[in-house]
Length: 414
Image 1: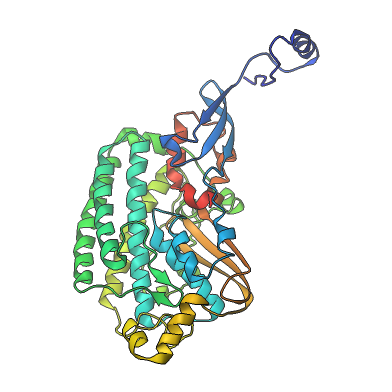
Image 2 (image 1 turned 90 degrees about the vertical axis):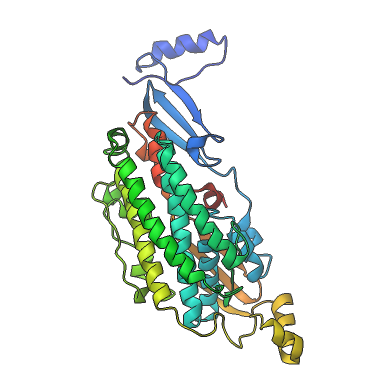
């Protein structure tokens, strides 16, 4: 039943009488429900203003911006390399992915191509980052729908990946691993063997998680046929990543526009059929298996050689050389005080991040500081469909639909 949402000032009986006399709307009342901005189901500081007719969602107004920090404008005031730590704070569940996507964007502006080992290291870091993000996303999604045990499985696997982060970058969370033109350090001795052992364990954990959830009829009923996004809707609203592929669109930037040598690895792009919450969940589980498949290939074909650009101005030299050679000392001084000398121009680079297409637009007028820096955050674009998607669903479906998007507000608000 359609009901009126007209509100009146307290005691304004004349306005109420006039409204009741002249309106053709049926009598009744909708309820406004605020979900968030501090609520477990919103995965961060997201506020949803829901208009309800009983338990049915009539309208949804997402309110974003609570976590806005002006990061893009900050990027226009500092050197390219100085911006790397800020990228950790976008999708803070996959900081290495942000580091690498930003570094690739600047390197595209400079016209640089990393040596083969440097590219392979980045692919290894990217797929470990994708695994960490998806493990957490799947585990938290299980909690969103009432299954606590799965989170304990997935978080345990994610902590193992953070152990690798610590060995590789020196940090478990905000890694700041990349530099324009390479990485801060090479992989330590025995690292690849440990990663392969983890891949074997993670494959078993993924199977266990699926057996726990996909044989649970309550979990299946809460997901199947809920939050359906058609192929046309997904394309028209600009969805990317797993949310787009779950609606039947086989688009993955690692295949469509390969970067960092992804064209040299064999992996499949999982695609859903129905575009519902169930497809979005199962698709991420399959993507984890494909990431493990890529990691094994990267380690098996890991080339030797340098990990960074060699003899390029703006790239830090080897520390021993800087201490013993005057030219290297000058290069180090210029790299730290001036930064890279970018040419005049504009570039856009997009990477297939765990949440979707993370893109960076750079406008340069020359020098070591960008004139303009803008980013395309996948979570912001994916959440734009919520007002249309939530209509007609029950309030109890809202956490299930939100969790299926696997968004993070750090990159949504920036």
